[in-house]
Structures are given as C-alpha cells and as structure tokens.
Length: 418
Image (cartoon, rainbow, N blue to C red; front, side, top):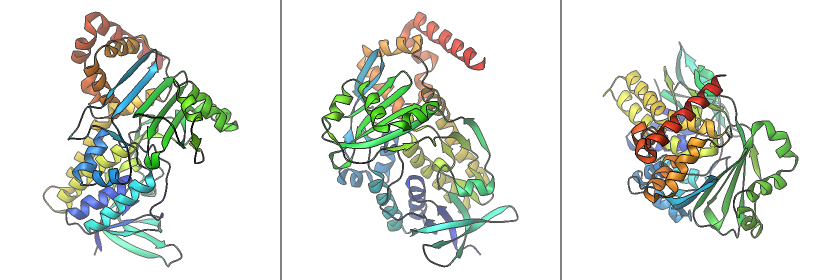
C-alpha cells in the first residue's frame, strides 16, 4: 500500500510549489531534495509577471517583497536601432518583474510546502525510482550519511531539473527538441545605478540587468555556443566588453563593484518531454526546458505546479480519470508554451536584424500603449500568438507593413529549410 499520495522529487521552484499546492488540497505529500535550504542554484532569477501573479494567488508575493526583492516595473528593451521603454501590463493585479535570489525564493517555497502539511526531507538523495510492472511506485534513497529507505506513493512527480532522474528512468519521450544555441553568464554588482530592468540585443550577443536582493544588480549575458572556448578564455573581459555594447551599462557597472563570482554554463538544452505516464508526471525543467535568454523558467515552473496539482487532485480524488486529467495538463502546458519556445530558440540563435522586425519596433516606438503590450509579450503576460496574429499586426503596421512582415517570415522559413 502506498505510504503517500504523491512523492515529489526536487523541491525548488517547480517541486516545492507542486508539493505546497497538493498539500493545501489535502493530499499526503512527501517532497525530497538532495540540497538543504537556503541554497543557491543556477538561475535566471526572473519571476515574470505571470509568475508573480501565481505567487500573489498563493499568498506568497508579499513575503518575496518583504525579503527585499525589488519590483521592476519599468523596462528598457533595446534590440538595436530602436529603443522601447515602458511598463509591464498588469496581470491579476501584478505589474512587475521580480528577480529574487534563489536562496530566498526556494527557501520561502519549501517553508510554505511544510506549512501546508507536506513532509519535506532536505539532504535526501534519491538513488532509484522504483518501477513495478511498468508503473512507477516510489523511490529509494537516503538522508546524507543515513541508511537507504524506500517510500511508496500513488504518483511520483519529477521536478528534478533538466537532467531529471525520474524522466531518465521512465524514458520520457523528447519532442520539439532543438540544439543548444547559447551560453549564459551572470554575476552580481553593488553600486550600479538602475531603474527597472534592461534588455539588449546586439550582433551575436545579448545582455540584461535586473535589480535583486540586498541592493544588488544581476547582469546576464549570452553568447553563441560555438564561441564558448573564446568566452571562457577571459570571462571578465568578455562580460565587460559585452556590457559595453549595451548603452551605458558597461560604464555604470564599472562605477560599481562586483561582489560575487561569475556563473557560466553552456548546459542550456531546448526540449519538451512527455509529461506523464503510469505512476509518474514531470514538472518544470524536468518536463520542458528552453534557453534562459527570455527568462521564462520560474514562471513556467509555477504554471506547471498549478496545472499538475489540479490534475492530480482531480485524478487521485476520483473526480476525473487520472490519465485524462494528466493528458489535459500536458496539452495545456504545450499549448501555452510553444509560441514562446519557438521565439526563445530563435532569439538564442542570434539572428541578424530582420526588416519586418525593425518595421514593427519602429511602429511601437511611437505608440506607448502598444509598446507596453509588446513588453508584456516578451515577459509572458500577453499571449504571443494573440499579439502576432495577422489581425493585430494589420492594425499596427497597415496593409503594406503586414505584407512586408509576412514576406520576411516566408523568406526566413525558406532559408531555414534550405
């Protein structure tokens, strides 16, 4: 007999949120992680507007703010040639991007899971995902320095990241997979003048800066994956050279002080995985991961947690067939993500400026309300498919401008096919 309704493997953004929401619904939940909290992890930091709205629904946004996380309501978007500045459209009462340190966000979520009634075991390493007759039945693992124990559950949720043990064990099918496009590097600075968030696109480079806890600024830069060896040869010089291309950001950074090491990774896969099967489900990066250049990971983890918790409550509680509820979870996840995924993979390949994009940005530069809506697209609060629908583009660009954009898309598609 299963000891728990659900075991959640991994208790960072996706796992702790899933455990919390399941426990709030009255399910018996065990959540485990090999880390202890608070602890750090590689991260974009950004909780985009939809993610902030989720935190607000869960009653946790005030705690994130109370921990000293600034609200970035203003944003500068500079893809080269045209600069858009504006504010994020509000979603469910939230109109800012928050960039908390993971030492703060993850600990807050773990504590909330415990408060909801989930059993959370830190420093617990899962050695094996147990499978019987083709169905996942539990896990075996151990606390640091302890003996191996076995725990059983009706469902095991893999929220254990892009190299998920749960996904590997069940052979979760990958699809929409794209090669690694970029490398990412970030660090923290004190004394940097900053008023909101900033995003820059330059030839074969991307950069951003966002306010985070303790009065620090977090800078992020991306280079093409094929230039990783060159980047690694002198990380500091290459970061500063990239920031020098981003308006006066390089100058502002030099007026401050770098307070932590550079964190660099080329491990940036792009793929969807099947989100469920007999006795298992995936959430967060374990099930869907994309290049961090658009900063969507935490928001997607929160979305997955809400959708998956609802599906498991309905399925395990007998209100709906479990398989059908999980199929609906995967379908909704994929539908909500695919346009942003394609946009992100394209952006991470550092395409040269396209005339149709320049025409759109030029049109937006003279229309503050539409510029703000576009910034909502970039941060995920305005649906991308809706914004780039022909009817909306016709309204923004006119017949001639829309024709040029569609022609440019066809040429780009033909070039990619070739």
